[in-house]
Length: 172
Length: 442
Image (tube, chains in turn orange, cyan):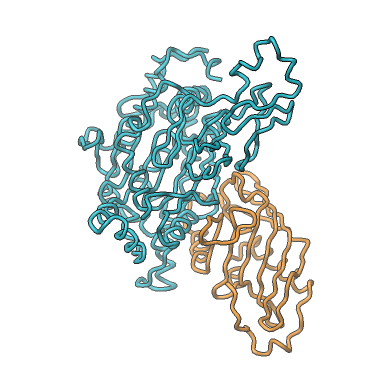
């Protein structure tokens, strides 16, 4: 999922993103999810940005090993469209979520490509008929353009990825 | 409390079934005893214990078991219970070991079940638990047999030989295995475990319920069609859309798919058409198959594109997709469905990628098609708690079926014959013994 092409031609002159920049972005992303601003959330991704929830901790490959969720831009559009489908019975009543995000660390930043890899911890509650609690590590591969980020890949490692899971309706 | 066979007999009619079979906890307890602990149950694929020392743990009904491969290569299914005081020996899902050591008093057992070491052993001299007692070993289940890599076990001695029990339905396993140019499957890492808030029978019935897809999966399948058309146009083949779109193929398509039932509750859908038949070709695969089997046999293998096959009560397979789903009943209104994925040995990796893509989209608790179904099982579980009507319909196309070869009976796709056939086996197993006191069941 990596591309060597910089998004911005003047990459070398860009200010290096700080942890604060990253944290602010992740908090804004979580807010869009909790406010159910799906299209605006989806716009945070690059044109080929991937959303991935592996089914095994340490899972290396999304294509030869099953995942809990694996969505490219088209599949995210399908899910988001389905959110408003009148016959999506599993979404009635429509679920709500709250995301907490913390322990943000920048793992790597490549000045030439503007690619930043970061890791954070999260807790997400999803309520429909009962409240489900999810938690784990979220890893973002972000493209920095000197001002803001785009998500190249968002990987969510649930601590119970290989456990028995209930129906999960919303994005982590 | 006594449940008599006569009472059980009164729960199943030729065209209806009483709602208590889905909602009554006492019936569930009896099902565990008489169905899950009384017939052949799928334990795992032998490639999950490929090497000597490999083991996996699983459940047969309510009973914890270990499947192992011992030094000589033999597959064993042992109760996961220390021979001494009864502690569960291992809580790992899988691993490799020559011995199992109980964490309580240190008894050690070989992976074939033989007792190898007892700390402070002389204390048992001249007792009924001395060196000659076979009660010192881990106990094996009553029967274990393997059909083309699929390991089945029975806790009851009173079952027909495995091949006889599978009967004509074995052809679905055959077709899945034959799709490997080497004639072998390998279970890959990665399992989905999906909790359903509903009785196990809803899932088992749904797999060959060809009437539901058009409605239940419209929000997933039709939305996928619509978004793809808008975003990329109708002429571009997107593998995910190729998988999702056929779920809303229309009633006549599903009727033409056809269903086949066999004795012992088994069934499959896709005697004719199948929602899996029109996937794009993978050219290297065709070549590998023709090199292995010849052109004519390859054509024959690919002409079978079954949808789901159910080996009643717990194993369901998708031959053309190489995924299997296993039913683990937890309680009257809780069921875990596990999905495993199989690689066709000798086939290009693209086949495995298709298996995985399919399972992501359909079997995950967080994607599209699976939650469509799970929600309807949940609603049936709740709806059938009402006393509006004690009976659940199995009337559709009653009496409109035809005898087929290999003991099969064929019917139009949306026929309720699948459910009638499952409840025939349900009643046979539930009433096989003498009248049961429910205390016996637990």
